[in-house]
Image (cartoon, rainbow, N blue to C red; front, side):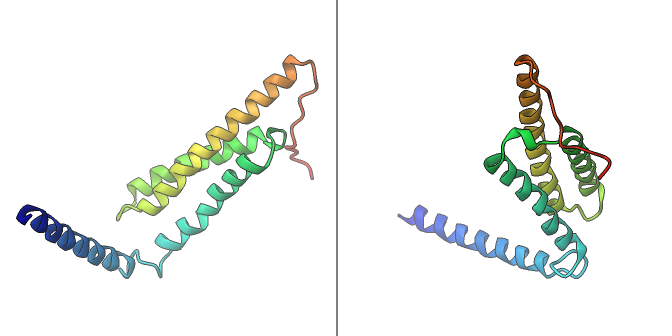
Amino acid sequence: RRQAAAGRAAAGRAMSLGLGALRAAFFHPEYGWKTTHFWGPVANWGLVGAAAYDMTMKGPEVISLPMTGTLTVYSGLFMLFAWRVQPRNYLLLSCHTFNVGAQLYQLKRGYEYQQQRKAEGKEVTSHFSPVA
């Protein structure tokens, strides 16, 4: 009993220290919620949300392989940037890490769809058109 009570007390202290550190980081003047270090990654989560929506609600026929490849490279470069910038921007890193995963899955879906169409002898169409 005594050990369990001591463990709960230690966990409570750790939790309060963790919340204090989280609060301090959230309100930090250089990278807190009032800066682009916060709002840039928050806005970029829209890319992940769009990819997740497309994965679940749209078929592979709407996937543009060139655009999806470009988004994958874009997020890969920003993952590198988020790691190298000081202080490290873990929110940006996590956003682009998830986006690379989502875009790679979309590339797989689009590629498999196009290969299936070729095997069936059907025309492979891409909705990507550089001329509007």
